[in-house]
Amino acid sequence: MLRRVQVSVGCVVLLGVPIHHVRAQSTVASNVILFVGDGVDDHQLTIARNYLLGADDAFSFEAFPYRAAARVLTVSEQDPGMPEYVGDSASGGTAIAAGVVTSRGRIATRAGNGQPVDTLLELAGRAGKRTGIVTTSSITDATPASFVAHIRRRFCEGPRDMLPTETDPRCPEDLKANGGRGSIAEQLAASGVELLLGGGYRHFTQPDETGVAVLQRVRDAGYRVVRDAGALNEFLGVSGKLMGLFGAGTLPVEWVGEDGRRARRVRLAQDGAPVAPEPFRCVANPEFGNRPTLEAMTRAALTRFEPAPDGFVLMVESASIDKQAHAGNPCGQIGETRALDEAVRVAIEFQNRHPDTLIMVSSDHGHSAQIVPWPSLFAARSEPQYPPGKVARLLTLEGGVMAVSYGTNANYLEEHTGTQVPVYASGPGASEVRGLLQQTDLFRIARAAMRLQ
Ligand SMILES: [Zn+2]
Image (cartoon, rainbow, N blue to C red; front, side):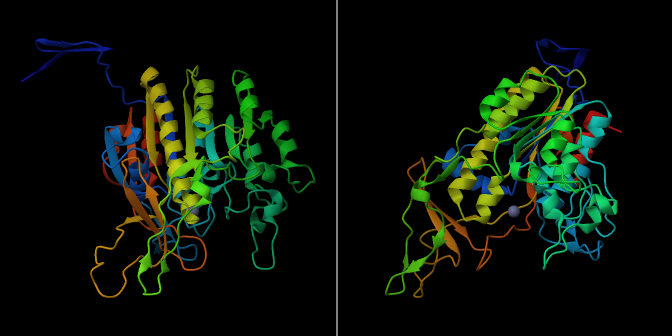
């Protein structure tokens, strides 16, 4: 049996077997890079993996040494002691960002009483660490907002979005005139977060309660604002706060179905037999335009943070895995899962240069798409057998055909589902990611790894 006889920084010597270049693993993380694949569960990952890599391969983060399942917990707003069984990006984002279980729609506030809760980015900022958010959604959307803002309703993204409608009171208690902190966009402007990259320009052109556009407030707070990939690169080396707004709202997805195809309801032939939807492939979205990809935004953030002796916390979200699953668009969600994987690869390169970096990859809630057999396993029965919702059949690189079914809602968008979600981790503190966790544990693990008070 080998016995450890000497330990020194950068080198471990086992009895009779010197092992060079084995780093003494620190448990303290200077840097945390947290990836959120919005709506990612094992099923959504498997669909993307089958299509992109083949059924027998794995994404970069699936090779991480630590993996867990995280329970997605959310509670009733009216009765915070009562669980709900399906979360949203606000409750899931808040659990990850701030370590508390709250009700759907709430951003870093407690269910029932609305008490604000400190987020990982706020704790890191107070500790003198640099902070950043990268997302393919509006930077005011629920997941990024959960790390920076505190508000009752996730849809109060800009000042005008706060105003009541005939059917919705919106966010009266959060208006500044009523003693609140204002909309999410206003809170981002005042946040001090160094780097905010994503979409959502239209929320910043809205005038605040004093009539001044939020974008002016952003500039007054010292942010340089960039609108395309070229400008992002131009100002990468310039110090100070940087906000990238690369679209009016959610950024376009990288991939779409050939000829715009997505899942559709199964048609029946005259004899009642289901007609197999024609298989198709995924192609690059011609409308993506001159925007930075998630990978490019992640690389930009890490390039900026690399000379950071006091460390940083960076949250990176691939947002449209969720949004495209809502729309029954498998190519959209596959392309955005690919974008997540490519962004994680950039983080792994960074971690190779800076081993004091904890990387975690997880999700806020499960989603709707499922791989189903086509034809049905019960096709020999006399009555026709087919999925009741929408179906797409995708041509895979292995030459196979994968049927993806969406069947969670009859008349509107597909729904989130209530499954637990995976967590992958690598780096200092990652060994805590094992077994069955809660999403709130991600906050706890990151906070402990960085020794944040
Ligand atoms: Zn959703």
